[in-house]
Length: 288
Image (cartoon, rainbow, N blue to C red):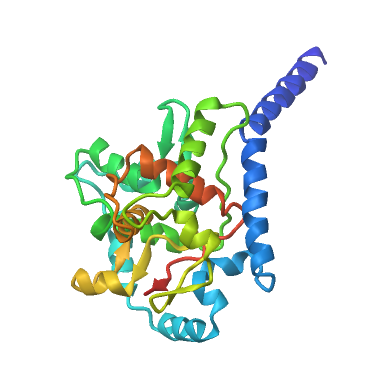
């Protein structure tokens, strides 16, 4: 009996530890509530997951065009390439799956995440690159091409799963990385002196140079994304990662982009994703 009681008590303690380890920082949760509440008030007709459609959700004409394109999306061949790359064994016989935990369908929602051992944020694309290095494969470009195809495939098979990125309560370093990403999001930069928030929070839904500015809420649900403008530049390949888009936004405000997969963009991606906690991955989508 004593052994049974001891086993039960140990199980309870271990269970409690697991719950505590996954507990969201109260500071971060307050930010999520405020951030999402702002958009719900600004666009009261939209449900939370509607924001995954960006500006299309608030422009009926654009939504009709989007739906028409998605009936025969231009990116299917590249998704097939991503799937083939993901499942093709390395020279040592291992595959990408060997570098990740859980079913392939769950990998997309495991990132970005705080790595307490390394003391930094891990992103999905960086993890894919590191997987190749660990298996002594050649390096691939960041932001687009093969890396984006593989990541896009993982986004496709994760469709419908819920985003839930955690900043552990009481972890000062994790909170500092989150706050750094938040600061980046709201900081003005470049010759135009604009922040991410200027366009995608304060002016979300407004038109600029013929385009309607999308809400920041839900941005992360469909990346890597296929953009028509990227396809024109890259010989038909329109896929790009969220950090490629960050660099593009920096250029648009005439600021020098940061290097991909370094702390600036990793922490920004951490904050940006967390603000969409509770939303579902919408899969691969087209944008202009």
